[in-house]
Amino acid sequence: MIQDFFRSDLSDFKAYEVSKTDYKVRLDANENFSNLPSEVRAKIAWAIEDSIFNRYPDGAASEVCARYAEYANVKSTNVMAGNGSDECIQIIANTFLNTGDKVLVQSPDFSMYGLYTKVAGGIPIEFPLGNELKLDINGFISMANEKKVKIVFLSNPNNPTGGIIQREDIIKIINGCSCIVVIDEAYFEFYGKTIVDKIESYENLIVLRTCSKVGLAAIRLGFLITNNVLMAELKKVKPPFNVNAISQCIACVILKQPEIIYKNVECILNQRKYLWQKLKDINGIQLYRTGGNFMLIQVENAQKMKERLLQAGINVRSFTAATLKNYLRITVGSREENDYLLKNISCKNGGII
Ligand SMILES: *Cc1c(COP(=O)(O)O)cnc(C)c1O
Image (cartoon, rainbow, N blue to C red; front, side):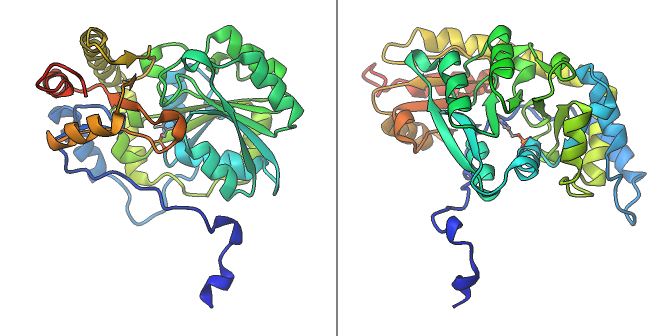
């Protein structure tokens, strides 16, 4: 049987199901709600016209990394580009994990940490968040050391909770865990604080960033930022031409004019404030503080609410994990989308279910 050649440890894996994209209002994937302005897209078209199509792209994505380094205020030698930060997560797992090595993650957190750990032959261990979805910092550090994990992954702000770990606690984790500490700052732009200034102060720190949440999800571009020693090891595993020439070209156009990103972020933050204020006043919704471009809510029956929203053409993120059964994650939309969501979130008799 051909199945005899399959990996037995992948037998209970399921293909990642990407939700359908034909909903009128898409508030499920933490994307930016607006496309790039047409004059920026025109500029991109001009730049692509000059691309070299017959040659492989720059394998190190040097110009993109240099421009991102400027944007992130680090040295370009400390930056590696990936085909989305997803790929950076995979490169990290593949670089440091031997079969059976353990990795510590929070639960809930971004699901790809566990997936790429398993694909690399590692074992993810979940540390449940406590009251109000807060992380017990000391407990987390103790668990990392007791279980002798090789890597801890933490998103900050956390996806899906929106929660934030303060800088002094991040530093406590980096100092306290005797392993590699990956801080995933996918939502940095909406939080405004970073630990990237510390990459050269600690031998065990890796920071992740992405372009996906600030209006460039289509080009699949993320970054890994770390010190020279870890970088040299990670480079051994990075696929040689992982970021295609077109994505590199587009990213350079944008990063030459970071105002495009700043403007986007400002719009999203205004809408986040608006949506927050409105949701806060609805009875029956527990709303969590957020540092991202999304917010987590807890309701009495999330499945029912999700279905009602889908009937109105609105897709929000629900979860299969038992711990998030009655939670929904809502990406901040445009003013119109947010108003439409708010109109549909309460049902006719005034209740929210
Ligand atoms: C969206 C997201 C990513 C994935 O980013 P890509 O660059 O699109 O692969 C990584 N980490 C977290 C926490 C995210 O929410």
